[in-house]
Image (tube, rainbow, N blue to C red; front, side, top):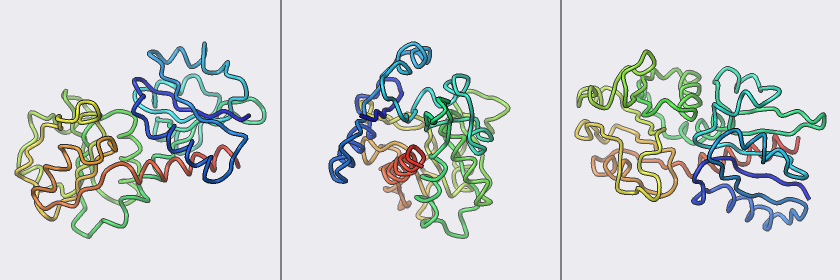
Length: 245
């Protein structure tokens, strides 16, 4: 029995286990299972998870997309360039190879919604997920700036310095932070929502709840709003292809 799973912290809400369990049932895949590996420290990847019998592949989520890299033997070219991994394959030679399928998932989801006016973007958050988003925006020739809680060389804005004019200028806003995720469903990134118009796209990587306060605030201003569900489906299917190629 091939075993797959998701590595993360506090992931009982996770999409992946339910998605793959249903996929295996619907497609009559009887020789595979998928489970959550909820760990409090990345060291448990080596001391616990890798000792799982018949382990064939893993997905990786917050907060381990970057910290898992030192434990891997090889990185796919794109994952290496980004510096974040969300998919791990155990090769026939027994090596661990890291990939990033968030790139594929985000690009496939966002492209149908883009107009000529979407030339500048704000990325909320600077964690592992934000790196994949920045990579895709580069490919699409969209300028982007990071927004973070603390000032840094990477972040052009903090939530305190971001103005309504900044929001008006950047017609694409992507939330890569965990703010608003279940169970903290009443929270939202603290940005000047009054700057949002019907010409904006608000994209939230969060999928639980399906409509975050961030997205509700955008919808109230007439913006196009997209949650993270389709992105997750696309990246999950890409992971499955990687594990089985």
